Amino acid sequence: MNILVVEDEPNNMKLITIILKKHGHETKEAYTGKEGIEKAAFFQPDVILMDIRLPDMDGFEATRKIKEIENIRNVPVIALTSYSKDDTMEKAIKAGCCGFLEKPINPVTIMDDIKGIIGAGGSCKYW
Image (tube, rainbow, N blue to C red):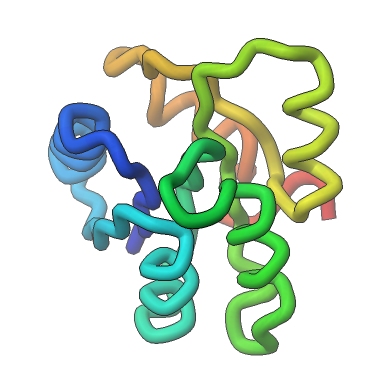
């Protein structure tokens, strides 16, 4: 799978991409919402991991903008956040995310967590 990781914290980005690459996935990195939107449109990843707290716009807005782009609107977006508020998951789903992963991520279970959200076929279970 080709996975776009949108994450502004360098240490989190490094950890996530190392784990994904270890499991045989190609990764692209974006550190802002704008960069994430541009890279999603250009690279057309199979999955997007979207941090909610970004420096230029939140991950909800970035996800909504991605979902407006015809050729990538069906790419599953998984929210990544350290927020544990009950309404964060609801906001993520309303913005177009398939699901939600809490940070800090668990390196042992993250791949199973991603598969649990997008399903074996690589598409959002909620669509």
